[in-house]
Length: 216
Image 1 (cartoon, rainbow, N blue to C red):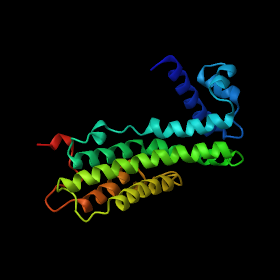
Image 2 (image 1 turned 60 degrees about the vertical axis):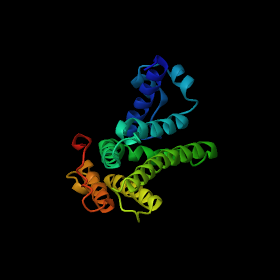
Image 3 (image 1 turned 45 degrees about the vertical axis):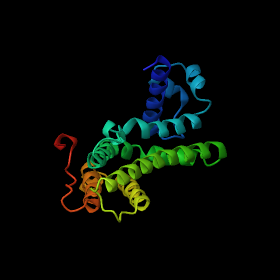
């Protein structure tokens, strides 16, 4: 990673840590800079304000915590393997994103008074979710064409529903304290989205447990 990007990543990570511990209002740029191992001046070279830093930290979390497996975006791969890999990708980032939901809520509060910041946060989050939906639609269409998924599948409706389910599980996980409800865990994500995958499959086309290793 280039030095510039490495330093920026450290700053964003420090901002997340400090804001999670202190809360956005109590967080100070000095502490964020100290945690990141940079000067306060360097911090402002990257971000003009604490508000801008918080928005960037929230958006970076979505990219940092969800590692999309390469096969997901491989149009030559078996659509069942691609869909299973997408489930694994979303499940893999679930805990980290759920733990930072409070930070996202703080970001919305922080940008209420700034139309520019609010627009940036809204549009960036919309792009992230649109990307997931477009990927899902691509996988579903390939699966239908290959005869693995039911031909009557409403691609846009199913893709939107999948992301809504994932988002709902994330939101509900934010209320969990102490012993966790298994539904709101990475395993819960695999079960919920895996069940939906099962409903898409043509009889005899395989199950949600299909993995790339099982490819003939």
